[in-house]
Length: 133
Image (cartoon, rainbow, N blue to C red; front, side, top):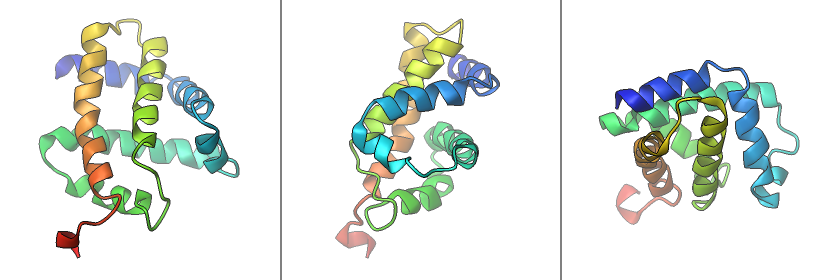
């Protein structure tokens, strides 16, 4: 886990990381680009930084941290479709590769493994189950 954390810190401490991420993410889909059309990107970057910290901590089995973010992104609110998360993760990894000089195959695997747990939680809250009602 230390290798992921070290890479994560190198990335989030580089002022170009979030710009690189959004450049790749917005280019990944016309639908995503349209969703961000009128977005204040300064505010969005601050929210992303908070979300990234919560997502990277999801492996600690503390989904309560993500619950409010998941609710905002669910079908009844921002309607962030489950397939967007794969584009989100791919864009993060592309940005990390371009920023972190020590990024390698193992680091990429650790980014995927670490963030996938948070992604799975977010997707699970997209449409509430009957059991959740």
